[in-house]
Amino acid sequence: MQPLRVGLVGCGEVTQILHLPSLALLPEQFTVTALCDVSGQVLQAVGDLWRVPNRFKDYKELVSQADVDVVLVANPDAYHAEVALAAIAAGKHVLIEKPMCITFREADEIIAAQKKAGVTVQVGYMRRYAPAFLEACRRIPELGGIRLARVRDILGSNSFFVNQTSRVIKGTDVPEELIKSGQKLQAERMEEAIGTPGPQITRSYRILLGLGAHDISAMRELLGFPKGVLYAAQRQGGAYVTAAFDYGDFICHYETGIDQIARFDASLEVFSEKQVLRVQYDTPYVRNLPIRLFVTSSNEAGGVSESSVHPAWGDPFVAEWQAFSEHITQGRTPKTDPADFRKDLELFTDMVGLMRG
Image (cartoon, rainbow, N blue to C red; front, side, top):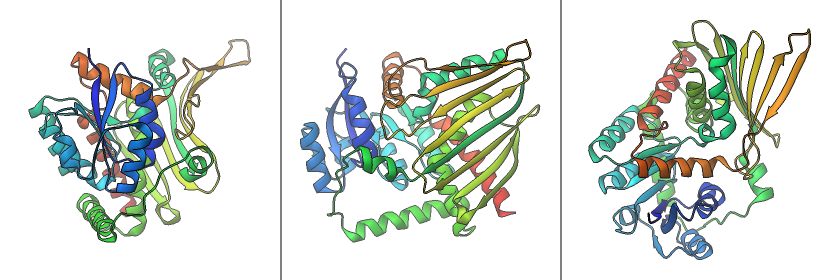
């Protein structure tokens, strides 16, 4: 089969550091044929660097190209839904960076459009394609009953990692009115999603859509969908969020926050009577860092045994693209499809409701 031809909408940090290098490692599955960005400077520089022939400043032109089979949606969050819908309407397969969208209305529109068009739409939850995570999922039934779970994601600003390890091409030519219109659209979508609960809770919802989407999505695959949210609160101006999810026989504690320490402390931890599983993630902005599964067990002799499982080298973004290729060519529905993402919105809005008090 010929490689799938990819058009990338949004040529910023994530595309430059993560998606383009990942696609370059999969030449038999993908070839990049088109780029789109509102910055002409970025578009030219990235296009020249990666030798991409077709370049557009309007995503509507890119999705209409005959030599584009797949569209990556990696522009600002507020525009994700409209770009995805345009690509689906043009008969393209779509990989959407998280969050897929901001509101239930947008999610339902994307779900309906995908079903009507019959194309493949996958949300960019790359953590769920990491081999160590998949191994943890495989081992869950062997635990013999979960007693407690914990989901944690505390990290410093991405700039700590990006500035020391990557060169990101940035443009200075985006018109101020375009920047303001994007900010206005973002505010409108946020108000549609959660109303006007104040800047602190609004900030928390944005963190959940961005960072928290990875955590809650992985939690759902590992543990299933919870019976409900027992507790949710925000502190420090919305920058820190804690919650407790009810799984009936056990509680899953959730905590996330952003500070000024250059480290990435992200994990999912599951406790049973005689074993603890912990999937430990590192920053995705330094490619190919190992994602490991740590196992702590009773040795049945009054002591403890500990092991570290690293199933394979590689990068979860590459694994995500490999899975996307298989979903398209084999006609399979991605586990991270639009309907799956909608479940995260359900939990996020429940959490916001509890934050309101």
